[in-house]
Image (tube, rainbow, N blue to C red; front, side):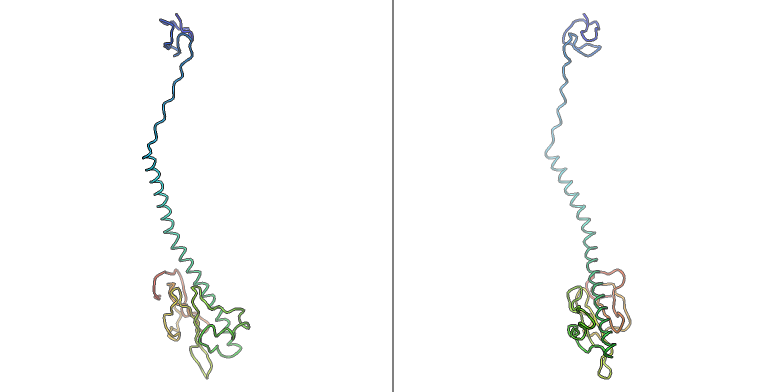
Length: 207
């Protein structure tokens, strides 16, 4: 007797597989091999994987937020500081132009009182509030022969408080500051207190 598939001599013809070709010796179709069953998914393992993945994502977001938020806050304060310095310089330019025409600086006590003296001749609009929403300060620091010959413009900075109650108390030598709370002060053509370099967010008016 011979295998119906390959002709190899066999002891008997049956559904038994041929040793040579591996098919039934009687010529029947080769039986299909059933695929191995897929391993069952453990719900507990899936939950743990999802939790670990979620915690990792939250941790990454937290790290990015810890880096980005302080930088964003610092950039916002820096922008307000620059806008305030620009406004003060604009006001000072108008005051200087007024003094050129009148031979004296305005003899008033607030920025709002400058409006009828400067607008619209020297300014189209009068900046009244600084970058933090507080009013600018103006004062005539010294009078000679009944006219004002020294003035000062100032902002209280982020904390919106002047370091000195009287603008006359500020030093006449320019001082650079590194704190957003520090004042910005301009007098007779120069800044007496001005921000320079990296600025800190510390509380208080320290330089």
